[in-house]
Length: 186
Image 1 (tube, rainbow, N blue to C red):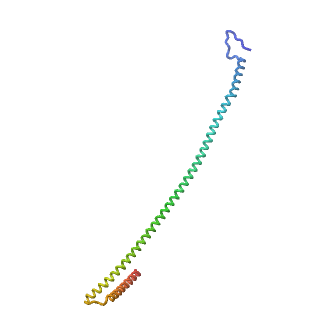
Image 2: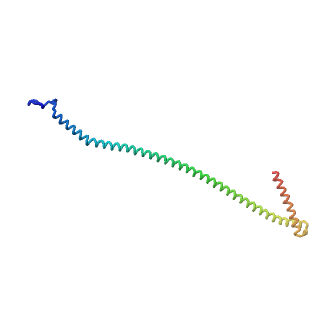
Image 3: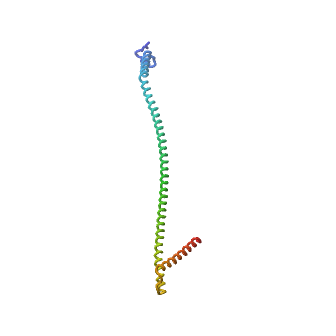
């Protein structure tokens, strides 16, 4: 029943009106149904998309982190291999340098020995030539000196030469024996 108002009376805000209550309840339920039917699924869809984006971002970040870790391991392995290879190259270069130095030393020693041998051969050859030349000159000078001292010509040149040669041979033997005895005592 609706309250009856007197003309002089105003409606009281504390009075309860059932018809208004039912109307507001119907509108509220209708709004609740509309929100539940249309708005809530959109919120859930949006929430699901955000959750997927966040979880996907986390998964992508974890995948990127795994990939970065794999790349770091690969980089460290390549760096280790490069260091090992550099050490091998360095050791090889040292060995090659040492081999070249040894080869150069051997070549230099061989060249030095060859030069010394050639010098000794030339010296022996020159010594022999000088000895031959001195023999002939010494023999001639000895004969000339003897002829001047005696005042007459000595026997034939062949006899003089054989005498001079025998004298020089004796002289060489005595020098060789003296050199050998000095070498043994020294």
